[in-house]
Length: 439
Image (cartoon, rainbow, N blue to C red; front, top):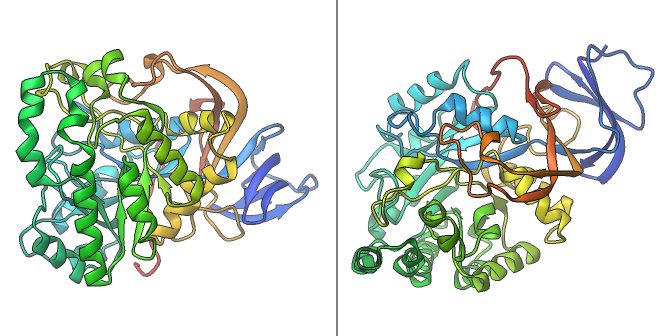
């Protein structure tokens, strides 16, 4: 007797696309067969004409709790994730207080228990001061260390090479890094202050600002023989350098940078403001080339919500960041339908890639013994994305009014049907993600 059978779907397994039925018991995949029609099950989902993907993992979100729950919290953020087809998230440390201690990590884990709609893990924030990072990153529920080389939301900043080196020398896991050169940001801030329009955002935080930081990071990583994960890469110059350093660095891009261009500053103003910035079409083309040639390992949403009131402040007083966890899947599926990437590549960027980079245990593929996490999508369904669909507390999306083809219908997490036919089901069932080598 199975707890759940998913039948008649086109499943994406390590062997490629296969017409399979999937049997699930106690949260695990226990059967993969051409048919399980003769088997009994407590629940059955008919995935006829649908694609059954390994559960999507969004490895970069900011859910603002504790300290800024008016923007988002762990309940609403994970609800948005589940409704968007995301089965697990990694949450960033720039909360208030920042996640830089055992107490702060345990506080987040306790807050998530019984409130999270999807599985979760939390990053520890790297700091310039000597700390016990190597102890913190080995704790259950921790996805690793996050380093901010350039100032963004919050007060975490590690701009000195010696401080970055100290973290990499002691860390036992791949570190995730926000690469913007802080001295250059300070030197050029007058551009934003004098310009007073978000179109000056990519001029202030320019290509060289990103490249200098990435170049510095790779030099230090190589000296320390320590792997790094470069977040939200936005420039052709960085991608060319990273392609030469794949033995030491993995690469993330966001749906925003793959979808929006600098024309958005005229269309939606400060609501297009994020760090690093949305850039020109020329830079976006280079990002897509990096997706195509394998330089890019992961797509993460960098979900970073602010209220409409906050985003409506005059630039540069307006905060940087936009929501994205709920729209990651439909935006990227639309790119699949537009021929920008294959569905197989989407699976690699959103499931296999995160699992590989962060050594996630039992997630990221449809295979026997793995967690029964699935994002089931209808590649033919057309929807106009609307602010009213967004359940994030900020209640807006930069994609409002955009028509997309490809939509998440069902979200299944460890055999639990969390979203069915576009509607959330039951209660929050999220648990801490487990990592290989960490009990």
